Image 1 (cartoon, helix red, strand yellow):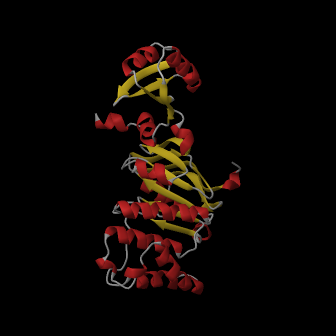
Image 2 (cartoon, rainbow, N blue to C red):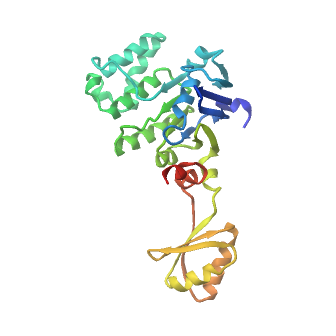
Length: 309
């Protein structure tokens, strides 16, 4: 991508607290008009990076820009079309949801007031908008936080663990909302430790481990970087296992519930495997390439497994 195609860019971004380095030389590039996941375990420095992008804490080294504008030099201009939730969204509990949004609108141009009804509609809070926020669940406060972000008519939304507190139905609604925002040409950057939801929600991902980005790119590419695998369905499982285990290009083979899973050195050997089975008189009912999950890729390239042993 050309330089101007990125809505967020950092070079060598580093943050230390005393002797502890929380963000280490991060080189981040977030394309415009995508859902971008900043994925890592708790304590990986995700929130600290977001706070630096928003000018809430200063880096010890490196440079960054939002919407093509350098931060902190042109922070106010850069943030004028950015909506953000950092950690848990906070509101005045004694006021209603609508009144909380009105306070935000009062600090912006007059037309911001006209966006309140649409913002509440987008996040599904119209029916509770006149209730006091202290009666809201955590998931409802998350949705009100996103409504507050929409008040700026943002080009970029930066959301820190936005699925916290949401039930399965709320997570599905959130995923649909993100896709709708991206379809409008906006960019949504969300940090999360929930691998499955990042995989279902985002187009691009950066995987961060101990303050460093260890992989970045389209999710489909990251999933495809592991060894290819295929699922094989046959009636004579034992005989097929014997044939496949001795076939060139097969590095591992196993069977579960009558379905064979073969790990390959190269996906191009699949036609040869099919030929060997058919010539051995074994009809092949299923021969399906298997995509690696983001979780498998994440565990393969981070210290997560080491930390849990």
